[in-house]
Structures are given as structure tokens and as C-alpha cells.
Length: 53
Image (cartoon, rainbow, N blue to C red; front, side, top):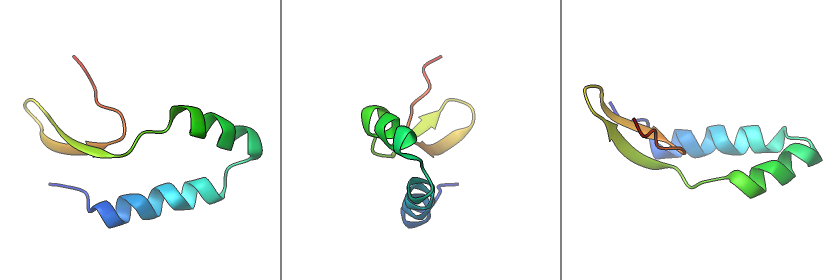
């Protein structure tokens, strides 16, 4: 089951609005655009960080 992209962006934006200045600086350095990937044996998942076994 895929997570709706609109809901994902709402979650990201909500978290972003609560970040401190230090957290925002870190987020800017490490953020990734969410993309959909498939984890073998578990089906499709949506995340900003792919997991490599």
C-alpha cells in the first residue's frame, strides 16, 4: 500500500515548521526528496531514505 504523496508532504511541512534553527540547518544539509521504492518481500514503501540490505 502506497502512502499518498500529498499526505507525506503535509507531514514533512508540519515537521519543518516546528524545527529550531539548528534543526533547520541540519535538515537543509541532509534532506532528500521522497521517492517510492520496493523492499523485497514487503511490497512498495515510500521514504526519503532508501534502505540497502
